[in-house]
Image (cartoon, rainbow, N blue to C red; front, side, top):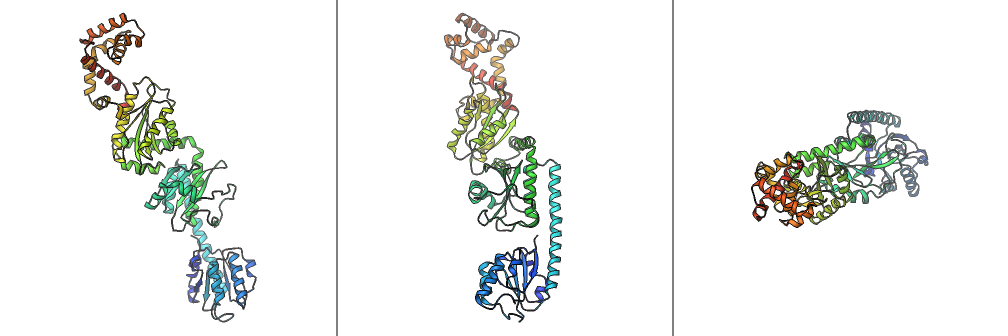
Length: 534
């Protein structure tokens, strides 16, 4: 909302005087902050930058060298525009050296066909400056109030970046100091391409990130960043937390200008994000809540896989264009020290973008892979933390619903393993059938038909027989190995097996019987895992 050279030249007084731009037209967007008039050759030493300099041309000089020096000094002093009367007091037409040097310096040069009272010009321009500044202050106050209301309402960094994107009309990206995207709002096709290769934008194009943290707060118009230090299509501000730079807030404005209240909104958002981060624990809880809500919508079938990937991008989790794998880390037999926070940190530390959520008594993660072969790296990460986990097939976004079920089934199978391990869905064998059956009444009915009397016995006896049956089946009917696994004498094992035969009405030495009972025991393990059906 700055008063630009172009806006000043649109005032009626300049139109009446036949104002014509003769050089430096590419810089008519420059802001005018004052009007100065003078007829002395060294007028430049009285300029401090941003002035509209009015002159009848008496101090410009009469020869080529003097005229070029005059223009060069005015441009170096930072004048916004040079306005010269061409009504005959000094010149009837603009001297070519003046126009040539102004064009070379990028200094807007305006010729006036008629004389005008410079005092009247000063009054009109200063009135416009005051009006513009009042409008700017009003807009900035509205921005401040809006962000204050968001903070009072408990908004987090996602809500703040979304508000900024709405106010500036451009995409906004929040990143931390490791150049990880934490929030992305107001997306467009062009900004999607930038975010897809964010490291190049953040690390390469922003090659000079050494903004001082102890610089004074913003007042008035902001100086432009050093030439070449920032991408022309992006404005950013540091998010400073307790005197340390925590990250950066970017506005990807492209070829459009980002000035006035929009720049102020960027400043206020960076400060507001820092305030929200002071409540880091609460902010982390809100972030986990958002991821949990997104995963729950996927589980409920409220979102397609493609929609899930699109919404994950708003949370700073870029899964676009990647193969996906779902992992479920279960709490069975664990001490609860490896939950969704630890899983999230482990995956991000290994360079995998992921949406992670706490779902009942397990953590579920939808992980983006740089290539299908990277699935083994996910397995290595999980094995490194000695957890029981299930892993789906590698899928595209369209296969995400099936992958969730595969991972949950594989996790349920992993929970019956004696040692912590990662189970792949494709390695489950016959358990894959049992997992499907466990989702309905069929498996429960089968288990009850095969093991009901034995389970009834164990419920009312201190000497349970199911562990004996399990060991005997695991050793494929080898009584010596089964006795060793149970740490009992063979005679004791024989007695227990006879009791099982009597209770179930079967003969355990028959292979077909053992096969039936093995399936029933495996099914019982699945049915006893509440995580599978949660």
